[in-house]
Image (cartoon, rainbow, N blue to C red):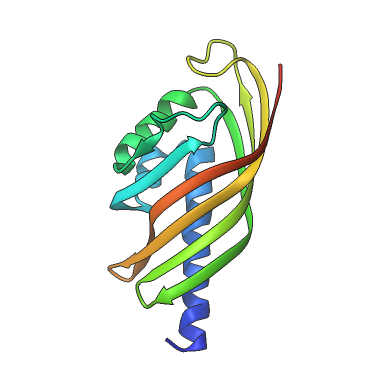
Length: 150
């Protein structure tokens, strides 16, 4: 893989991750499914405190449905920045993204208390090129800090 192909892959991967964040914030659950491979692993066990062993899945539809339930009525703003993306070969890559998110939770949410959550952490991702498009084949969110106000 030459330098231009590698840089093109990195840009395409960054666009996939940007689409992931956009879909969550716009609550576009069908779009969210489309940024993943069919059997992608989503590991959010350490995205919340305490560690939740139930937040591991190999079904992007289940991941989207869980987000739809948890984030119903919630306003969110997700940011991913300072990625380190390593293209392993023409069809595989890995990346680590610094992340920050804000959640404004209304009263009556079935999972979270009303108020505001602000978090920081890292996404650890694997990517696979399928049909010429870079998709996420795995994502794991780890947290550095969570703050709650409400």
